[in-house]
Amino acid sequence: MNPQELKSIMGSGLLSFPLTDFDANGDFNKQGYEKRLEWLAPYGASALFAAGGTGEFFSLTGAEYPGIIKTAVDTCRGVVPIIAGAGGPTRFAIECAQAAEKAGAHGILLLPHYLTEAGQEGLAAHVEAVCKSVDFGVIIYNRGTTRFKPDTLAKLAERNPNLVGFKDGIGDIEMMVAIYQRMGDRFAYLGGLPTAEVYAAAYKAMGTPVYSSAVFNFIPKTAMQFYEAVRDDDMATQHRLLKDFFMPYLDLRNRMQGYAVSIVKAGARIVGHDAGPVRPPLTDLKPDEMEMLKALIDKLGSQQA
Image: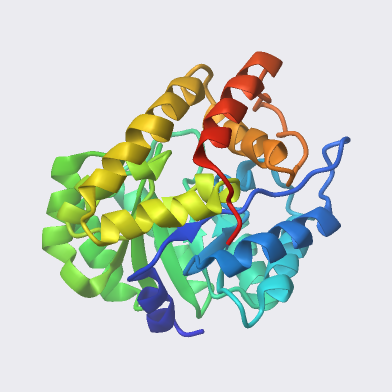
């Protein structure tokens, strides 16, 4: 897939990040991962991000990463495009990007680099090195220590034609408006704050109608219903689902740092698609929290496609 095709995919529809399956020992569970992708693929996501943030990219080793991406590509071939997560220090990010391209992924989402903050010049050098290492499309993830300014993005876009997307996970409205006004349709834009449904209508108003849904991992029918309500400006449905599910879900998610991933694995377990435990330093939900989440899910009804 050429970079412009990736940009087109990002331009409409709902995107999601499948969980990465681990067994009881915390090792990659290939069979479970294949079954998960087979279950999610028919629900209508425009693309799936393999080994993204919700897929615990930050917990994966360099040795197991290529196999995870290849499993996703092979399982979803001809059904739904696979975009791979990549990130960490520049040289490791390049290794991931090249492995994903070799495995047949349609592009990468470039996750934040590492703990230390960096200036715009260093961030630009990091992104450019990754872009130059591959031919397929690259999407920047604006989150954590990786915070781009409009001028930096404009220069990167000019020098790197395969840089085609921008995902925002920070929520700085003023900066997001400035980036959109500066870059226009040079990029495809993706809303990527945790539990993105809460912010979806606001991001649509800023020119970012597409977002990635973590809850798609366990309530895919409801996730698509919410996306369609945003797409169609159906505020009544949005407000109903926000009140009945998403706001109490946030209360539970916010009990512990890192629960944004853990609660998704908990939801998958509750609906019968167990992806195993999260890897440290994340922690799984406690039994009483599992019961609270189950009650929220049960109120939504069947999730059959």
